[in-house]
Length: 80
Image (cartoon, rainbow, N blue to C red):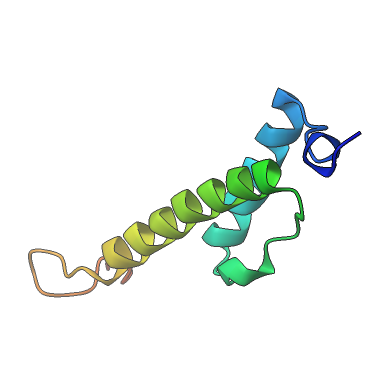
């Protein structure tokens, strides 16, 4: 069996899992070089998840650091 065919042992479930792992890594702020897969297809799924998770993390940080209308950060506790 050629080397190319040996690396194609993946399923929709395994690609979904790779994507989810990448998403969580990106969301947690891990570097993209921590990608654990050697096969190109699962690695691409992980990297796609990492990109999406990293983007969501950045959006969340921006939202937390954006001032409210009164000029205070939106994560500051409001007094009752």
